[in-house]
Length: 444
Ligand SMILES: *Cc1c(COP(=O)(O)O)cnc(C)c1O
View 1: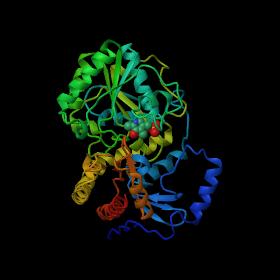
View 2: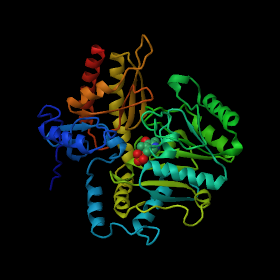
View 3: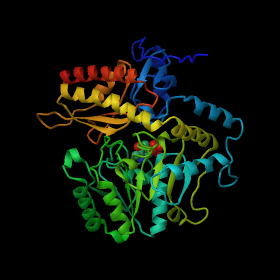
View 4: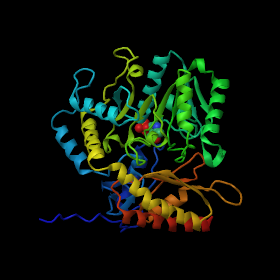
């Protein structure tokens, strides 16, 4: 018997964008959905598989966003769908804190094995990245008995009160919605394009700031994304993260890796911290962990995790059995299907195409990132002013490619394709983005 491999669906725009069905739904949305909740592409999605999303008018888009890095394993991944179908008929909820179930323990075992470092680790689960950050901070405060929390510039950590205070940008996440949380301190991090510092120099600058401005005796934790997501896929200089970990350890500070966006094979390593030789005290996972279902985890050194009294951590829906079953299907594929190799393949195909674009357009000041987490930053070479990425993303959307923006100055195009994207789909998508870039730049 020969294997018959179904050809990947292709990009196909068959109506104007938005089409008539999307337009009718957009009108309904406007009447009843809070306007603070935006949409980037004005189409409603009916279904999706692997790297293709299909709207309610039958238009098909190549998805370079994955719902912000969530469906890393591919939309409606077969094994995730099967696992969910099976679990939903067995147990949808029991609350782990009242009556436990196996998939929760299984995910904790996978995280203990796959997060950086071979020390004893423990985990617990919540529903969102923001909650994982909140709980990481709670645990660090309990463990250290200290109040202050440090983050670095250009970071993003969520939308709850604590995490919106931890974000670098108040707009749009917190502006006008305070009072904000107390005892949060922003320190300079490592942004080689802007600061030109080596990892050691940047670490010295961060340490000086924390020592003088915060005071280490009050500092419970330092929370850093190993590759900053919303900030524009900023890759820190080599040596920065291990130097900060060493400083944290020497000063009794818990160092927390916010791997919510960069984790779970997104960058060609199971956790991005691995690229830098960083072994964090706590690791936060969310977005890509459960193939599209809501699940987030806090994993860390057993003695830190177990410093919290019984009953001090939990929540009604955290570690829901269906979400855990989906995550088991994701972890099984990490091991069986070399998902990190897939992310590396994507970088091998996509990065040279982005480098070529950069040669044609001096406005692309940097191509950066790792694996399936790549970005280009846009700066006017004459004035040094940031070039807004939104019009390029909008033009690509009309032409059948969904691409997200990022950056403190909104001048970064970020690529977060699913690991199921084919080489041909990558080439086609970057071709579309090249055209959108050329027309936006010449119109500006
Ligand atoms: C998305 C994100 C969060 C917040 O996760 P939610 O699930 O949206 O609450 C936190 N940290 C990072 C790095 C993120 O990218």
